Image (cartoon, rainbow, N blue to C red):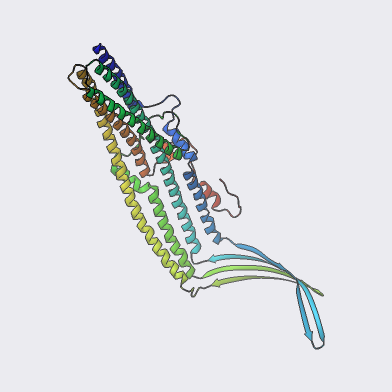
Length: 463
């Protein structure tokens, strides 16, 4: 009878252990399981942070036609109409004269030279557009990386929950079997208490895992825009990566969007210095006017006049305001140069960190895989030894906990490897929908710019 109970318990626990191993090695749901690519597509198409950044770029694009407008003529009509009454007192008598003046003037102004301000303002606007494009890429990378992280976190926490559920079932059956063996005098009350303690701990671990999973799902919904339903497919690490850390840093220092944005902002600040300095130089323009005046009283008086004037404005002293603004712009340019150095160091740090995370996670996967295999063999041996009295119940419980810990650690390392590969891409400026091949309509940062750059008329916008 005792032998039968032991054999049944061993068979049950072995089957449960096999289920646990299957979870972390191939954790995936049914046919309808959500994939990482599907989640990334959803995040790219619906994330409000990315949509806001793309719309913000369109706003910055308008700075270029605004700067170019200084090359274009200014055409305006000024008109007036009214009543004029004149009372005249003379020695010979008084008189009152009422007229109805009507005036209209058409004026065309064309600037020819503004001290280089227009050219500098145009270059500044173009550099700000390039900086904003890089910022949009940064937001895109951040959204997609957060989506990868959120997906991998949910997958990890689902896998860990399944492992803990399986562990709880194993320990529940072991607790029940231990009590049965105690009832027939094979085990002591201490053995029962140890089995009960581990079972209660496994229940607490399962509850904690459920809470962690629910928190990860909330982040998933915030980033990706929908609540994860069912079991997520196990995500794969990104396959195309640099061969070494040096290659990673070389690409990152050329392509990282945050660093590119800092460089373009520095160029724009230099353009601003030139633009403000231009206010100290003469302004040459051509002004043409055609005026028509009608004035009715006792008799009609009409007149038409026209003139073309070359107008030269030479600034002499502007209360020190322009000089102060030039100094201020130069200090801003110095600040932007320092920010390039700051951003370059940040990129280098991110590159080293992301590479080390990748190498570390890959090494951990190898170690934890070996640990899981060894823990499975050890657990099987301890159970057999416990059956013949050479091991205690506590030894079996410890072996089961070591296997669970190894399985959980392996799942976490697998998650870390996935995230680390995409962190490497992000550091290199390649964590974009186009580079990773998402099946989406990729946002074209030049489309709106080309549409508005040379636009002379129109109030409509394209969403």
